[in-house]
Length: 186
Image (tube, rainbow, N blue to C red; front, side, top):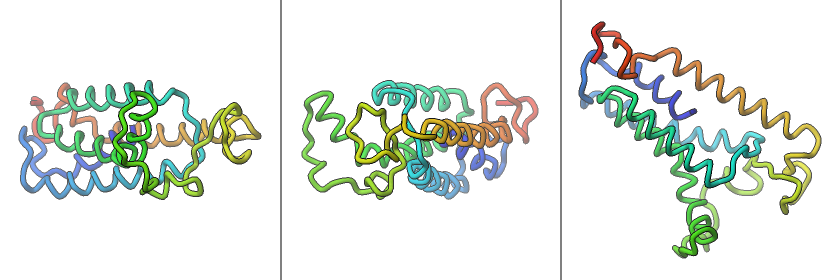
């Protein structure tokens, strides 16, 4: 949802809003939005948070939302949204996917030997919290200890509210809404 919000804000910077095709002048906006989406991953991973879904369900839901969003936006914005969605998950693809492929599917890419690259995936940089049944190193990592579950829920709510506000501010990227420069829509 954060990537969608970033995409909606970035789309507002496109020139010639009524155009149906991506313009060369749009490319720096696409690249900048992808960088912001990539970095937002680190900021969000640093917040205290638990995972409401299993990793597999999280991947399926995230991919479904990304694909659905790309299908729902006007043709001109598909590249933008594909770029921000991809950039927002790229750190997980690099740091976490090799270990997940090995543990879930038995596919060993021999890539996890060097450790995790991104500091928000390191034990000291991550805000990830886990159920009390996990082998989390300290009580600050246990979702069920103290106020951790409430903190996680509030952090999720804040992120969703900000993303929703960004989307609401620029709904014209969707296929079924009139664009600002073309009242008839595209």
